[in-house]
Length: 359
Ligand SMILES: Nc1nc(=O)c2c([nH]1)NC[C@@H]1CN(c3ccc(C(=O)N[C@@H](CCC(=O)O)C(=O)O)cc3)C=[N+]21
Image (cartoon, rainbow, N blue to C red; front, side, top):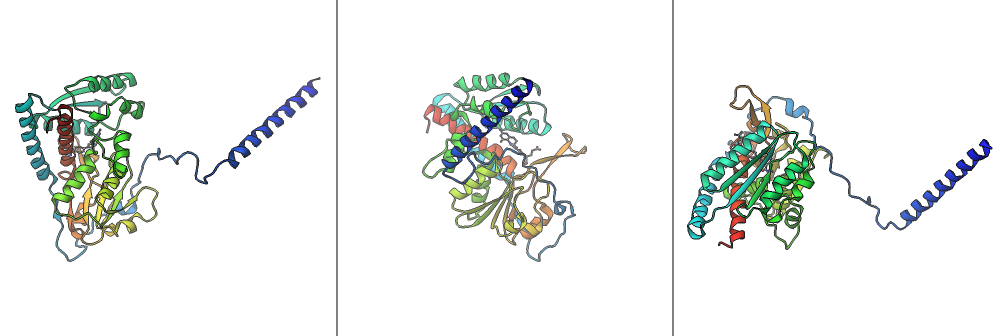
């Protein structure tokens, strides 16, 4: 009896297997495209390991030409901030309202604390109202969502910023979904990003660091149209939107990333290089064409007990080398960082103007 039962069960399982195979074959036969049915996931960490290049000491005097011009992001950002201050004042005098920004910080990352402190200070200086909501590292998802939701409902708040990266246990997508599109001053909402990507559409907000890079190029008199631009890194916050923006400015754009063969070869064809990989000193002199313009978006905190907060920021570009090859370059600090904050202020001002229909 037992043997018969076992035989029956094997028979049933085989029948089931055939049925499944048939269903799978039918599914395959109705598949029209050869490409995978779900898009290849980009959800793995963009972990560039330091190249042997980035470990070697800088070689100076790579060319006999003059040193690159340093693009002073701090100075340009100050200029923009003073214009924002004037506009905020004009708004206050005309309609008795000021723009409001809410900043949410989860956890204790020292670099995040510095950026948030800088953002709040910058708001104060230009007359933008800021509300700061700090949550502990281990706070539940609901607490962050409800903070975002309450700022979303608050009519005196025109911009909401959730400082990234969030602690591992939190679901970034769900949290950012609670953020109203009209208050997405970071420009990270898929609708803003999609509109940035598509011809004939306009996003409500352009992400701050990429917008700052373009502003630096324009104000430094760098022509973008028709030029070869290489973006190093493909993150949602910098690499992707800057590639889209450069295309909007009619550059020919290549994106190199952690799985690119010979990134240095591709980058050395570029008139404009935007480095946003987050790897200290990744870009060495052999990555650069003589005369290239180099925008360094990298802000990697490295331990440094001698500096004020115990760390200092290091860029993706080996500055000492690049300055000998490039025609213009942004330093770290003092380059893109201050511009990111200035763009946050302009996005918040624009958002408030839109909300109050103030022109
Ligand atoms: N939701 C979100 N929006 C962001 O815009 C955002 C973020 N998350 N997470 C982290 C990155 C990084 N970032 C910087 C902002 C200012 C400086 C900055 O002010 N840098 C100064 C120096 C800073 C210092 O004093 O150490 C400089 O480069 O001169 C740098 C980096 C914004 N980010």
